[in-house]
Length: 500
Ligand code: KIV
Ligand code: ZN
Image 1 (cartoon, rainbow, N blue to C red):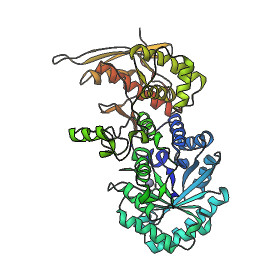
Image 2 (tube, rainbow, N blue to C red; image 1 turned 90 degrees about the vertical axis):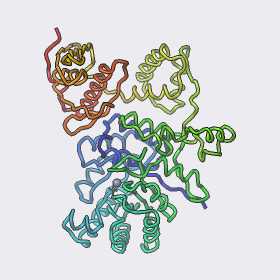
Image 3 (cartoon, helix red, strand yellow; image 1 turned 180 degrees about the horizontal axis):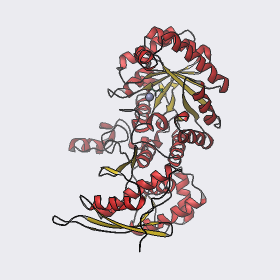
Image 4 (cartoon, rainbow, N blue to C red; image 1 turned 30 degrees about the horizontal axis):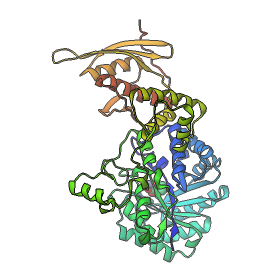
């Protein structure tokens, strides 16, 4: 009989905490809404005790996103659990997810503790959390490298203390599928009260086996799988949501398990994450990579034209990759435009529709055919737009093999304009230095794809212009504006000299 496996999405927690993937509040809420549309069962919205920003985003997602259970992470200490509860309690269905490590290496080296003490702390934490919230998940961090007898004792005690979900992480991505499946089978066989909780798995991808291990766990009875969109997460990432969901959908007779994921939303969710973080997926990534459904060789193309099933085990449509069809044009009115957005699943305010419509009309002047993809990009820019603190007014650069690269930049902040000049290693460097002199901020250019760091905060941004220098400066300003939008306390300006 086919059973339903729960999908626990941790893109906003395990995914967001990895370098380069940080998101601001508006971005998290937008992604949270899309995850709900995708049909995940649980959204882990963050780690509330980590910072005030994390707390606020978990609380806002709990308030705003309806449908899935909203979980927050907490170490096995009362202060963390209290903070987590304060954030998630606003959800229609809140969950406290508390964890403590159970492997000897973590117990001895990280905590300087003993197995008995850790067992007692796990019990206390679960009991405490259950006093606040009826839905409590307990994770035994580094479970796979733990002594399995001890792990089974911890799991049994956590369930007896009130845990409703037990999560078994392969925290360091060390397992291979046969072993990890064996661990799940062992827990099911040896823990007498295991039927009173959902048995969950959380696999990391250090050996590239996170999805394979998760599937092996499902074959051995796991009832919940923890994963992330595009497989982002600590180090090499977590199990990729889209790969797990499509494996179950493509091989139903093998797994006898389904998920509630609306797979037609997969491509849109993946692209939304890319547009928020500025970090693309590799072209050959399964399910969502640019080449995942592209057939290059003549023999393959010939086969696909005769019957797509010769080389395709899933249809592009099943993951929401539609052959883009023309939807609207320059004669379309506002009503048709907003109706189409509704069909695409966007919930925009009246003001956002009005402003998106103006940009849609501008786009119609430049581009004859407007596809759903264009609308999605346009609307996402609208929803995700951060307030523009600094805008580019004018830019002039000189460079050449014999000239010292020099840039003069005029920026606008509100009604005021500011001008400065600088020299540098090249025109882009000179222009950035001039921007730094005006804004008082100082970013290091990390890659040419415009990923800059302000102190320890990495931000990605893009801009398009046929002038490479102008494009770079616009992207750099977009990164500055994102930085200012995500750190509300930061003063918006270092007051550079005013423009004449
Ligand atoms: O990888 C891990 O062990 C975790 C836990 C906190 C669930 O992320
Ligand atoms: Zn993890």
